[in-house]
Length: 542
Image (cartoon, rainbow, N blue to C red):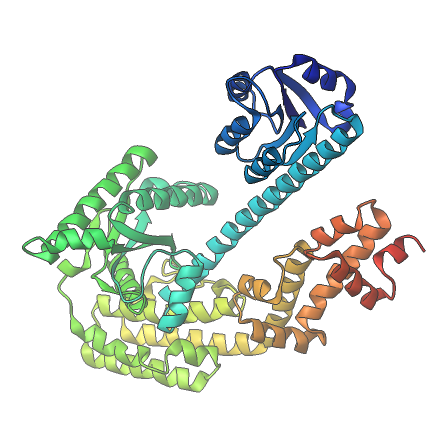
C-alpha cells in the first residue's frame, strides 16, 4: 500500500482533497496532512511517505525548496506540485528538481486523479524492477558460489588455465586473488570433537570455520576458501599490496612474512576454539605462484596431512624436503598430463605414464611419505575425471578412494602400483561403457535446469556454466542426443509455458512476456505466432 502527504499553508485545500479523492480505490492507505514545509519534513522523519503533494508558495520555505530537501533525503519519493501561479519559471524549476507533475489551482479532481494514478504506477514499476533486481542478485550470488567451488576443485585437481582465462574467471567470480601473485595454501581439518557430529552439523561447522578464516585473514590478505575434494577445507591467501609494502620495509621480508602468518594462524585457531568449542589442524604450504602452483601445493599439503597425526599447525617450509619425490612425480605431471590422457580416454598411454612414475619411485626409494605423494597425485587425477563424467568414485569402486577401507595400499610400491593399475582398468571399463549414460545424464540435467527457470537469465551459456561444460560442446552433445538444438529447446519450453499461462491464467500478455524473460511484448508475440500460427491475443480471443 501507498502513503501520501498533502502540504499547503491553506489547510482547506488539503482537507478538501483528503475528503473528495477516492484514495482507497487508488490504492492509497494513508493520507497525511501538513500546513508547512517544516511540519512536512518533521512528519516524514517519523512516517515515511511514497508521494508528496505540496503547494509552491508557502511562508518560510517554498514547495520547491521542500521537494529539493526531500529529493536529497528520500530520493524515491514522488513529488507533485500544486499552485495557483502558472508562471513558467516555476514549471522550469520543478522540472529541474525532477518533480513528477505540476498541477494548477483550483485543482480539477479528475485531472488530479490522473496525475496521481501515473505517480502510483511509476512507483509500482520501480518496486517491481527493484524486486527483480534483488532476485537476480540473489540468484547470481548462488551461481557464483557454485562456479567458485567448481573452479577451486579444478585447480586443486590439476587443471591448467591460460593466464587470460584464469584472469577472466577470477574477475567474473569476484575472487580477489591476482595472477602471478605469491600465495600460500592452508589445508584445514576439523578436530576430534567435530568428528562426532552428523554430516549436516559438520557442514555447518565447515561453513563457520570458513567464515572465521575469511574474517581473520581478510584484514592483511586477499583470500579464497572452499571445500577441497579430499575431505578438508582449503584457504588460499595472498598478501594485500599494502601489507606486502609494509613487510618489505622490514630487515628480512621472509621472516616478517612468516611472523605475520603465524600470528594470523594463532588468532584463527583461538577464534575457532572460542566460538565453535573445537579445534582444528592446519597444514600450511610453502609460498607458490598463483594459480599455476595451486595443484602442486595441494598435493604437498595432502601428503603432510596423510603423515601427520593429532591436531596442530604444520608449516611445510620447516620440514626437511626430500627432492626424490619431486623427481619421481615429474613424469606424472609433465605434458601430456595424466588428467589429459584420462579425459581423452587414452587408456594405454595413461597406463604407461603411471608405470613410468612407479618405475622412478622404485629407483628413488619407497618411504611412506613418497607413497602418500604418489597415491594422492594419482587419486586426484582419477577423481577429477570421474567427476567430470558425472559419476562418483564409489560408483566405480565400492571403497572409492578411502584409505581407511584399505590402508595397506600405501605400504609398498608394489601394492600401490597394483591398486593404481586396478583402478585404471575399472575406469577404462566403466567410463567407456557409460559414455552414452553420461550424455543422457547431461541432457536430463539440462532439461531439469531449463524447466525450473525459464526467465531472462536462462540461455545456452548460463546452462553450460551450471553443468560445467563449454557452450559449444554442450550444444553439440544436446543436438546429437535429442536431434534438437539447445537454443531451440529453450524457446520451445518458453512457448509451451506461454501457451499454458494464456490458457489457464488471467495474466496479461506483458506479464507473461516478463515472466518468460522477454523484454519486448512484440518480439514475444512474433515468436509465439511463429511457433503456433497465432498471436497470443488471437489465441486467447479467437
